[in-house]
Image (cartoon, rainbow, N blue to C red; front, side, top):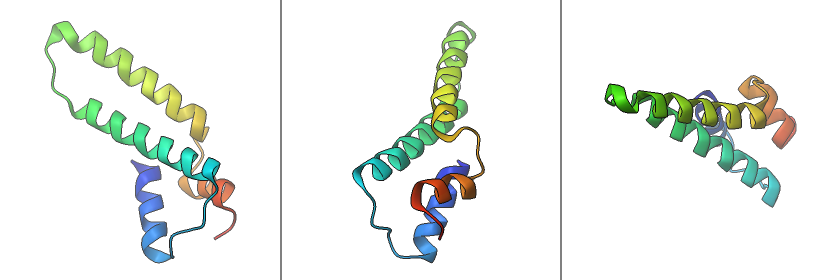
Amino acid sequence: MKYTNYYSELLKANKVPNLSRNQQQEIMNIVFLEGSLNSLIKLNCHADTQVNKIHATYKLSAKLYNLTKNQTPQQLFTKILGPH
C-alpha cells in the first residue's frame, strides 16, 4: 500500500490539496485498488478457489500498474499534484 501510505503522509504533513475532479478520481482509484489488492492477498482460501484468487490478484495488479506505471509514490504524486 505504498501509494496510499505516501498520500496519507502527504495529507498529515500538509493541508488537504485543492484537487480537480480528475486528480481526485485518479487518487481514489489508486487507493481503492491498493486496498482491494491488499485484502485479496490476505484472504485465506481453499485450493479450489486459489486459481480465482490468483486471477483476481493479477487483474487488480494490472489495473494498478496502468494507473501508476510502477512509478515511485513521490514521482506519481508529483505528476498528479505538481511539486510539493
